[in-house]
Image 1: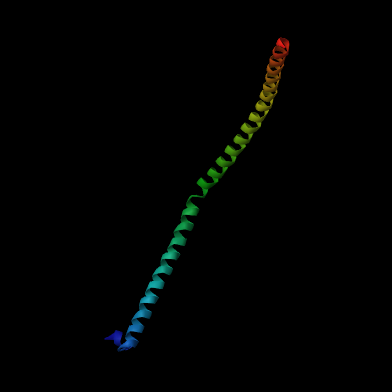
Image 2: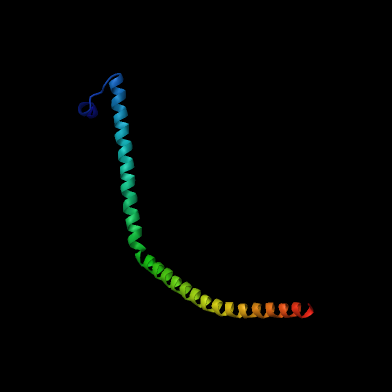
Length: 104
């Protein structure tokens, strides 16, 4: 009875339009509440895991520094190894050429 006083009952097409608008408002309100709750929960999780995230960032930085040191060491080792390889190849070519020209 009270409902009839607040919102008059429409007949026909107007009633269908009114029901459609009510459904749209209920749907949009539901989506808005859901999105607000999601923002709240994401903010809460971010606040609760901030210490873990900081430790993870520090671990990543330490790992990158370690990889950089490994690369530098590998570069130094490879340059020394490259010098040795060049000397070995030069000696092999010289031995081959001396053998080849000695027979001719």
